[in-house]
Amino acid sequence: MPSTRPLIPALALSAALLLAGCSEGSSDQPDSPSGSTQQAAAPDKDAKDTKDTKDSKATKDENRKDEGVEPAAQAYVDAVADEDLEGLVDAFHSDAQLTDVGRKFNGHDEIRDWARNEVIGGKLTVLKDTPQSNGTTLLVRFAPGGTGGFEANYEFQVRDGRIAKLNLQYA
Image (cartoon, rainbow, N blue to C red; front, side, top):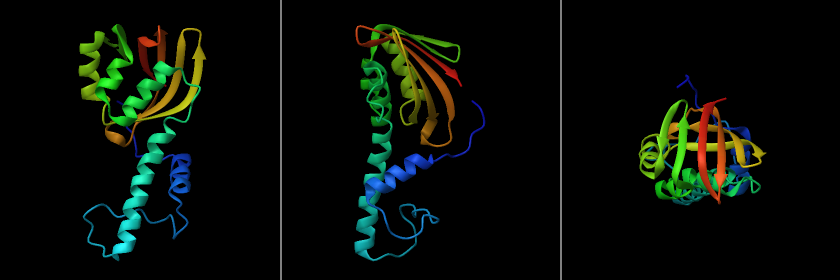
C-alpha cells in the first residue's frame, strides 16, 4: 500500500459542520478526544456529543450522496459506511469474482473473508462515478481503518442487480 497521510476532505468537513448547525468558535482547534483532561460545563459537553453524532452521520451520508450510482455499487458503498459485512457480501452474486490489485477472490466465502480483514472498518468516499453499459466505475478514496488512504478505481460489472465482477486498482 502506498504511504498515506490523514485526509479530511474540505467538502466533507463543510457538509458535516453545516448539518451539525455549527456556527460557534474557530475551526482551528480540533475537538478533544474522549477522556480528555479538558474541563467543560455539562451543557457544552452535551452539545459536543450531539455534534459528534451528527458529524458521524453526515460523513456516512456524504458517501451516499450519488443517488445516480448503480444500485449494486451503491449497496457496496453503503455496506462499507455501515460496517455491514453481510450487506456487503449480499451485494455480490454467489459466484462473483473480485480482483483486488491482482489478488483474486471467488464467491461469497472468499469475498466475506477479504472484506472482514481488509474493508470493514475502513472509510470509502466516492469521488467520481462513470457509468458503464453493464455497471459502473467509481473513483474512490479508501482509508483502511478510517484514516489515511489512497485513491482507487473500482470497476463494477453487474448482472441481475448484483455485483458479478469487481476489479479494484490503484488510481
